[in-house]
Amino acid sequence: MATNREIVLCLALVVTTMLLVVSLMDRWTGMFQLPTMMTHRVNDTYAVPPYASRLALSQDQTAGTIQDHFNMERIHQIQNITREYFGPKKNIIDFDDIDVFLEKCNPATFTRLNSAGVPCDVTHTHVNHYRTCAVVGNGGILINSGCGAEIDAHDFVIRNNLPPTASYANDVGKKTDLTTINHAKLWEVCSNLGPKNKTVRKAILTRLSESPGMIFSYSLSTVGSPGRSKLKAIDRVIRDNKIPVTLAFSHQSAMGNKGLYSKLAGKRWRVPSTGLNTFALASTFCDRISMYGYYPLQTYNNRNVSYHYYDRGGYGHWHKMDQEFAMFQEFHNQGVIRHVIGECNSD
Image (cartoon, rainbow, N blue to C red; front, top):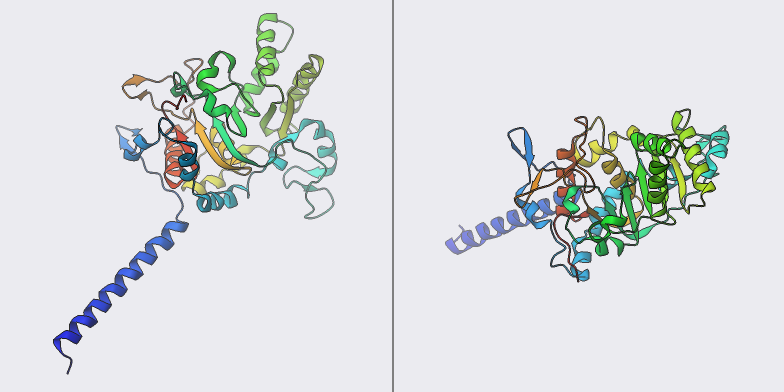
């Protein structure tokens, strides 16, 4: 018959074993859990989750602690997903290759015509792989942020829809390696480069010239669409004016990759924003992404925030900016990205 001492020892062993199993299960599920939308619904709008106050990291982070923020294991998990849908070789193709691409490749599959499974290897991209990238949105949250120098310090800087930078450089930086544009911006740029309004034309030429070496990439389909002719018109103007900008196109529309976000966030957004698609594309060739200017809420620290830093603007109701914002915050919390909100360190 067991003694009291033996019974106690057996119970202690059972409890210790159970705690160890629970701990291992938590670690296992945490490693592979996909992000969830962690917002707090308030009167049909989305408020900032409690941990969002930790997102304005730039004020007191050193370079070492910024690097320590990133969880490379989690980043690689996300990259394995996004690379199924995006990649610079497929989505940032040198526009000089448009004719050979249409002649020899299947746009839908990005494979050689009449060669089943052979990748479309006749095109080129100017985008490589980078250790650090800044993905810069156009949000009014950047006003008086002082983030310009921090943004420009990244290996590769990506923006959306050709925003002005020269007059706002202290807050948004002046470096642009890649700008992705949507349908509306392509039409606007092409129209403004026409000969009718010399003042507007000069302004667009100046904007294109602000970042020598920039890649100007249309993220929607050019195949069999007016987008191809618009890009050709812009290309002629750029060449005629000797502006050091490279045009690029995508093998198919970024809007066809909606299934990606079901895997990333459990959401199938009908119209993902240009910013969201730009992040997903950037994640395929950037190891550490810091995001700036992605803040759709109307106030921050008791002050009003405009939608754009350069005008009041606004976004269409078809975009779910609040839900996209929540995903970015969750990715920040996981160390997948660094989502900067607030002022940057000026040192």
